[in-house]
Length: 114
Image (cartoon, rainbow, N blue to C red; front, side, top):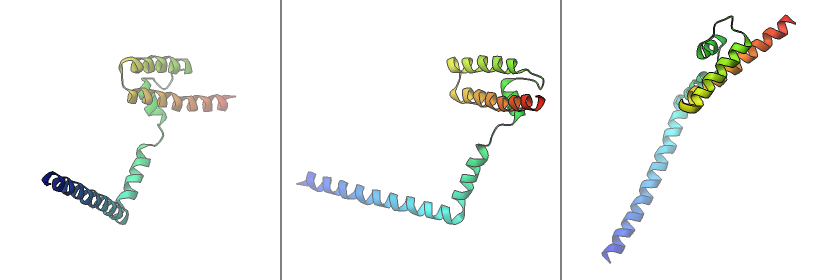
């Protein structure tokens, strides 16, 4: 009898607690939308996901301004493989983004010279 009563109290208590947490979460979202925090957070996400500049790409790959496309590929292959084996996925993705950025720059330069 006592065990059944305790089990019912636990079940009812967890249901009440779950509804309270859900209601608090909804209220927090509502307040964030009213105060503009949600909009500001989205703006920060967009700001950090901006495209990489040519200078940043060159710094990541360790290249100078006069590096040829072959040097870019060589550095990319070296750094990408090194980070694949014993580095981090984050660094590997930065190296890949740097190569993509410089690829656009070199393609544009080749079109301008022809």
